[in-house]
Image (tube, rainbow, N blue to C red; front, side, top):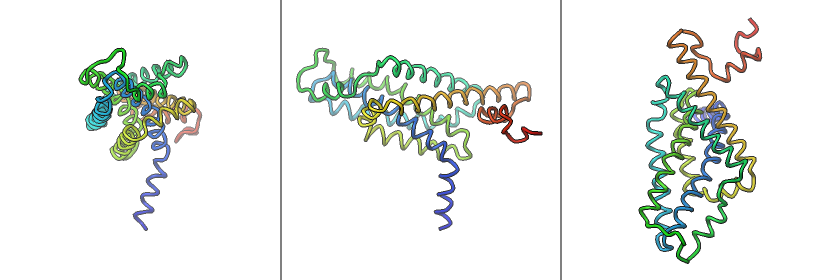
Length: 241
């Protein structure tokens, strides 16, 4: 019972971080289904299942590789700042897609994949797989950076990173098409995910900026963005003193 109680307490303590990770994984998982489906629709019908399988496998491998070094790299002063700036760019691209409606319809993609005819712009297996891998590099880095950004502020960042990675892989491999449809039907989910990614990016930028000023000038050595907001509102520790 003591062990169960400890597990429950751990989940309670990390509830906000876990919620943020789930929303990030949900928001980013739908893109994978669309990219893989679009690439698969351009090859001969007998090769599509093979392209989809290896496209998903490549995304899984890349996420594992990136996650293996993400937490360690984010400990280096300056790299978290760079990662935060990259996430802001990712958020900007997501915002443009949401506002302009430039995201491809998952229903159209599914229809093309299910078609038995020869695609008008048919490409070979390796060409389609290379297209997926190039997209997967960007999407995997975005996903891992966002999850690592959430995890790095926790006492046990590695556990949160592993949970985030496992969830991302499960969602991507099993339910990415459903998630893409869910995001199309309920765009507010994508907006919440976008806001969380923006917050994580700003927190990474703010926190690492303080690390840089701490290393250079010995000021602001432990303040995160959340601590800074509480302090400005007079709610942080010692704010009233």
